[in-house]
Image (tube, rainbow, N blue to C red; front, top):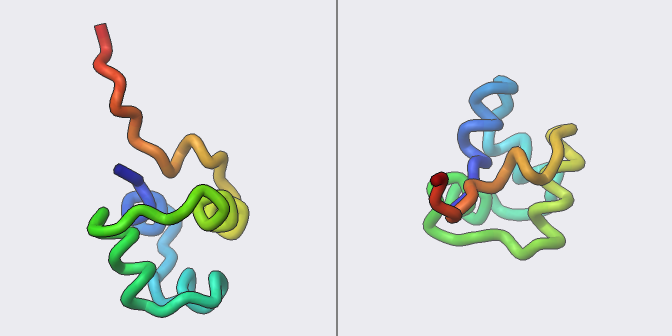
Length: 66
């Protein structure tokens, strides 16, 4: 799972803008944002760079907190 949608909303950035910066279709970025599809690690790193966030901010840990 990723937090792309939440980070975009926090920064006030539209998915269409991110799609343009990534060189990907809006549908692909929307699939990432809706967690219907997970981006490759390289793409996730590029998204983090474009959004000026640490890649860790884009990922939801699947580890259980004790």
